[in-house]
Image (cartoon, rainbow, N blue to C red; front, side, top):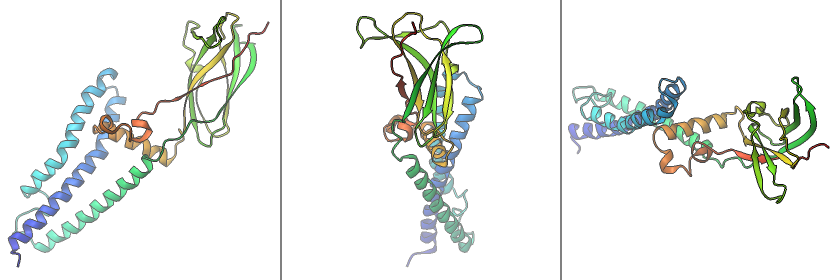
Length: 268
C-alpha cells in the first residue's frame, strides 16, 4: 500500500507538471502582447526592435515551465506544499489545475486548427482602364478601377507602372514619375466593392500597364484574428524560424499576390 508520503509526492509531481503547462500557456499569450506593444510604441528603433525584443521574450517563454518546475519542487505553488497541508485541499487544487489544463489544451487546439487551415488562394480581381483625364493641377492622369470579385475582403496597395519594350514585347521596364504614387491606391475592398483612382502615366509612347499588390482574405473576421494572433505568438516565442512552412499565413507573414492590368496604349 502506498504511504502518505509517496502518495503526496505523486500528487506533487502531477501538480508541478500541470503548473508547468499553465506557466507556458500564460507566457505564450502574454509575450505577443508585450512584443506588439514594444514594437508599435516605438520604444526601440524599428530596425532594432526584432533583435532586442524577441530574444528576451523567447528566453522568458523557454524559462517559464522551468520556473514552474522549480517553484513546484520547492513547494511554493498551490498543490505542492508540504504534507502538513490538508490532503483534501491538495486534491481540490489538483482537480482545478486539471480542469484548467484541459481548458487550455482545448482552447489552443481550436486556435491551432483555425490558424493552420489552408491559406486562401489567389484572389479574383477585375482591372478596368477608364481613360485619360486631367487632375486639378492640369496634369494628365490615367483613370483605373479595381473590383474585388472575391468572396472575402482584400487589401490592394502599392501601384506602379511597367512599360513595354518597343523592340521586344516580352521585355518590360519600371516607370518612375519622380515621386511615390503608392497613396493613390491603399484600400481594403469588401466582396464586390470597387475603387477608382488615378495614376501618372508614362510620357513615352510605348504601351504600359498597372502593377499592384493584393493581400487576400483581410476581413476583420474571427478566423483572421486567430490567424494573426497565432502567427505573432509563434514568431514571438521563436517557432517561426523552425516551422515557418507550417505556420499560418505562410510563416506568420504571407507575401502578397501581384496583379497586372492589360497593356494600355496612349491616345493619339
